Length: 266
Image (cartoon, rainbow, N blue to C red; front, side):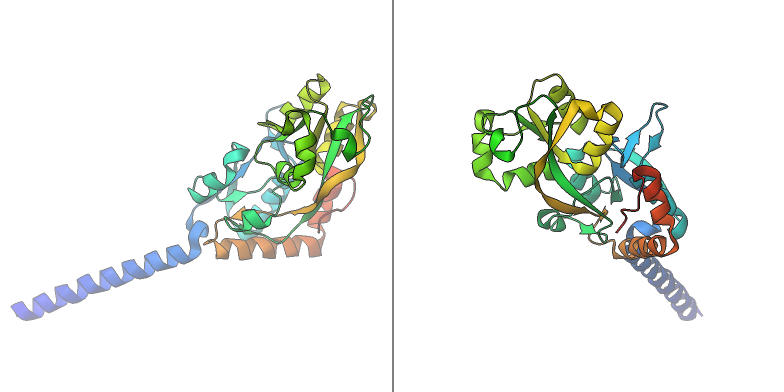
């Protein structure tokens, strides 16, 4: 009887452990999808992708996309402003589950994160004041050129090292946000800013297009994607499926027209 009781207890313990292992394995496979809420990390000054409006509410093209994706994957998504220069660290540490805010797909970033399919095209443009003598890249020689720290703008400019050497002090003046750089441009503390065309076109449309000049030459084209942890394949698959559905049923076009006046969703 004692042996029988011991056997029953042993079987019960093994069963509990087995179920626990299965549960943990399932949770590991689901990754971020096992969480009740998913956290989206973004730069809350990046107009019109994700920013705070006059009422302090989080709004923007990427924000509206994320809210629609939230409905389609059945997960609540919360919005967390982050230091953009620390975005990959915030993701890998588990503090956020998405980097989603005009996040440019690059080979270097692919080593750290998994990207969704591209959903928007962009260029790194050069903007200066309307009365500036700068009209081409060659004119940047001796100029103070600004860009957001740890941004794809900095990466794009650095692909032309000889040009960078010709800048004032042989460097790019970096700022915590694009807004900071543009304010220094307006105050004439720097001569030009390199930033996402999506942001620049929106910014100058609000501030007064007559005050600014966007040069014809740029620092290259790129595409935006959403970044997730490499192990979060299930989340990535659901995100891509939601994007495809939104493209097909016209919801992505509706959101795009709201913010840009036309459908630019890929």
